[in-house]
Length: 629
Image (cartoon, rainbow, N blue to C red; front, top):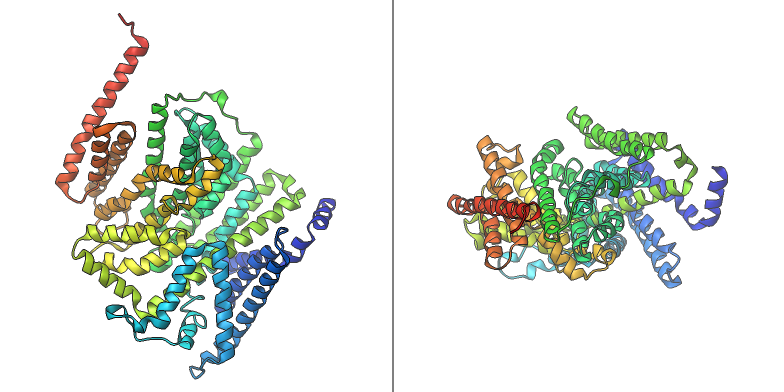
């Protein structure tokens, strides 16, 4: 082992120099989850600064990086360190309430925000950077706007005090939740990936779905849902599992376009599936005050419906192509080692649920789950200890993933600070109420459209936070329950990853599938169509969420019936042609409608569909097994 380690160090000297940074990040996450917050200011500012340094160092040490680009990275690194140092000095003075920002304070704050902006551009994309830039411009120049958009006004010093030198902006409560709760689960996902659990889940999924026509596509859905709940990133999930699943789906007879769309839709839905739900469930618990366990319980039935719809649509496509189920011999069996490796996923996941039910905090549950996964991984495969490169890659991946989500959430802090300081969120709510009037349906449509537009190009967590702050109060004002309004936003924020023209998950799947990105995104949109209907279903039938005050068994039964009918009718539309296709599709949408008589008309088509399918099955049986004259 020592020889392997020395050889690896000799081959990667630059990585060795950055080792303390990655180890410091992992150690900080581990300590905070296990023993709690030692100093809130130090934790928030220190983790943010360390995240910036890690991302800049990783950029500097890339081999293809030009020397002038490395100089820019070095300058940015020094700037964020100087800004952090100045923050500590100013924060103490601001506590007295008698300190006004001086020019060095303003310059250092601008330097810190500039570094954050550049890392936003590199790691997240232009969308979030533009939204943050618009928020800053509104804070500074909003007083000049006409009518209700104008606010009292803020000068540069006031804005920087709010956005940078306080716990209202970049270092606000959302960043606190990420550092204290979410990062341990990011590390947990990186550990499972390093242990090879992803491959085990894929092989297990292939075995469980081998009896279904188009089994490889079903396996991709199952594996992406299982791993996606932990990964917290649609694009990362597509890239991680798609390199295996997409070629397998194509090999089974589906087109590259369909293969990429299946992976994109399934990977995006992982963040809707309990128990982990990526990172968004923890943020929602902090924003709403609803317990994490109740949020995951509320999300369970809608998530099952989403994945059931993917299975149904794949089966419909497989039947259209005349595919047959695979036999046992067509699936590679799990080895004994792989079965044991599966324990590193199942046991920690069960441990998380048990600990949370017993009253442990999410961070504490993640802490013990991480220890359990590491212990089981080494116990079943002691050879891992002889692979320093693989273990080190886990540390690096975990630290980089944690750093990236820190940058995203810190950026959202700018928007939150401006909206709270200027009252912009209330103005948006008033504008939506003016346009929609008393119509809940129109308000939901406006909210869904806003979610898709604002969510394009953004990870789920920042998209959710921005949208719920802007549009959430307007929908809640019309009587929508708190948990339903927040889950509504989460669904559309997640599904923006498969919505053209900026369908990040579909665009990530397209090169792997060797298909046109736009065609993949359109097909993934079709596959995920039930995901766009489910939020309307649980807003109008809140019993689907189980935990609401107006829960009733009759309401739950009606919700289950109408949503199941919607899946069957939309699936029938996929295989039909002409007028019948439009009729089934319209009925699938109508069965979720808030008007009872529209639902009944749509449900009346369901027996017709089932009888037609039964007749087709009978005709096929006769053709295959009965003698023809």
